[in-house]
Picture 1 (cartoon, rainbow, N blue to C red):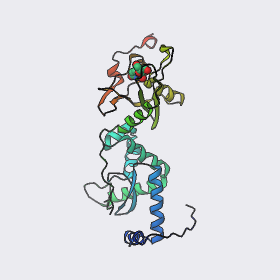
Picture 2 (picture 1 turned 90 degrees about the vertical axis):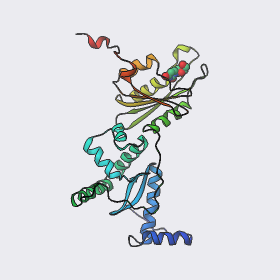
Picture 3 (picture 1 turned 30 degrees about the horizontal axis):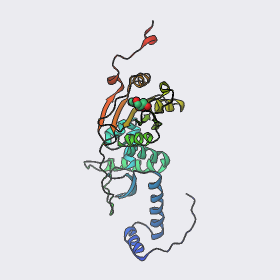
Picture 4 (picture 1 turned 90 degrees about the horizontal axis):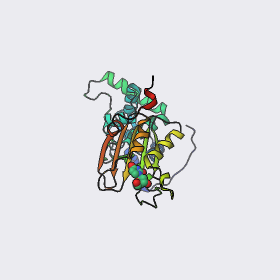
Length: 276
Ligand code: THU
């Protein structure tokens, strides 16, 4: 990477900390540069952190001891999509997306980390050979994930804020996860000519189609109700057009009902598709 010099005045406490932190590993200035670059990347990829491992500083998933390279390796070998990755590691969708986006942005670094992992696993017989020991002196506190799809639900909450519902005053938000890690949001948009109203779910689906994405993994729907709402019949029929995927309906207070298109619309209309 191209670099230019910069001289810094640091508070003496920071300087002594840096000295302790980099001892035996790097010069003060190279460690300061490294930590600044890490700070930049953490801003770019929320959910990613960095830790000292037995083989150097590595990108990890924040709140865990899992290396981004481990996630990337698993994703490459299993071809797991966002949902499968989230299920496999038991964390949030946001973390899966952060890991894969980071790996895609720094492919050489992650490929090198992954190659080290392979060497480590060949030369050691530890119980978890694919992960070098992480020894961060300032570990990030563990993030408690309440629901594996909490970030999709958060995206739906965000979309709900844009609902145009002056007639019913019932605001709904949807967030749709398309294949290839693509996220689309939708809100209900009502009209003075009531029948022209479109629901949040269909709005999100149509946005995805307009962007060329027609395979979906999950949709989150949020409304401010006592219990999670159910998509209307029209939305179910539109969903069924694009196969079976997960439906997560949530209230603002956090109650979640999980379902699928096939469950909510059994024996769906196939019509002309069934003609000989
Ligand atoms: N609505 C949705 O956007 N999604 C649903 O699943 C149920 C209903 C909207 C349509 C209308 O603007 C308002 O909620 C009241 O029915």
